[in-house]
Length: 304
Image (tube, rainbow, N blue to C red):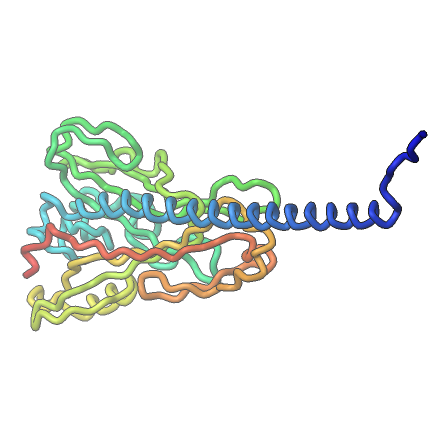
């Protein structure tokens, strides 16, 4: 006897297809969720690595400020050899006529265009190395370094950006040096080296001590210069004892569909409020992290 062939009924086939589609949909949802999470974590890891490691390199350099200079361990805008260069008075007289010195090369507040509604600061330091051969922040090998004063300028510089991305900036360093009796700072403004990439803002604040009563307070660069303009007695000067630096780092990659949750536009950098410029649609595609670091100037014992 020939048995009739067995087969799925139409209803069974439709149920099987429905169940299969549900399983595929669930798998696809898990895949897309994992992909979004991986993109978010990758962006977060990238911005943290850039901010933390880059800032570590910067603060390492800043701790050299005022080392072995002619300032008698004071840091202010009136003494020759001050570890922070505020004005021409901080350099030997034979260097005070350098072109654009006080408009381009000294420490300046609100100098450089950035990705906020304001502008970023510039910080210029100087020091005399302990070692006879060093590598400056540009990667240059400096020989006979103990007889030279190293000058390093930190500022934001626009970098090339891929199509569709916001304008990008990096924190750059411009290094040079001068010897006793020299009339120029060799190497300054010739080349620059990127210290940190994708930085939207860079701000500086100073911790100062009033010698008259040993009180401490924070001041911006302009506030400090204005306050010091009223003093003629060195015993009343405001001496800088530490630097508070703040950077706003941006991720290199976009965060995709999570961008709608990324709405922060206002950040605190070195005690100052900065607000992102540009459109929300563009800004929300990238993660940002504000990182602040206080650097004590250990070479200021004479200010106590």
